[in-house]
Image (tube, rainbow, N blue to C red):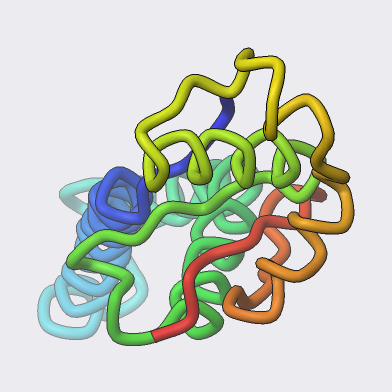
Amino acid sequence: MNYLDTRDLYKRQCELQEELEALQDVVEEARELITEETEGDDPDGVWATLHEAEDDLADWQSEYQEDLDELNNLENEVGREWMHGTTLIPESEFTEYAQDLAEDISGMPKDQPWPFSHIDWEAAADALKQDYSEAEYQGTTYLFRAS
């Protein structure tokens, strides 16, 4: 199954945020050097340093900013369990998740002829969904246990 653990997503979110902040710091430091040390001339290449830092930041933003924004939005949807861990279940796999949950709760394997072979798993999964919330991430709808 393609479950996601928000602890892994939180870790990636932190990594991206740290990278962004480090690049922003380099740009800010270069700007401060220009303000402090130059008066129209460029003896130490500080303008080149600034342009390089700005280019690095722009490159990072074009490659990773959307990912970071999606993670931030997902964090807002999931709420306080984000960094502590909650499982995100793809909506397309929720029926199978419901079957596995029933097996875990009952202690009976789902391949038993009765009663598992006579259960409308789509209906059971739909009933279970009322205890779950939905969130979108990278074009997929995920369900997670609402806290």
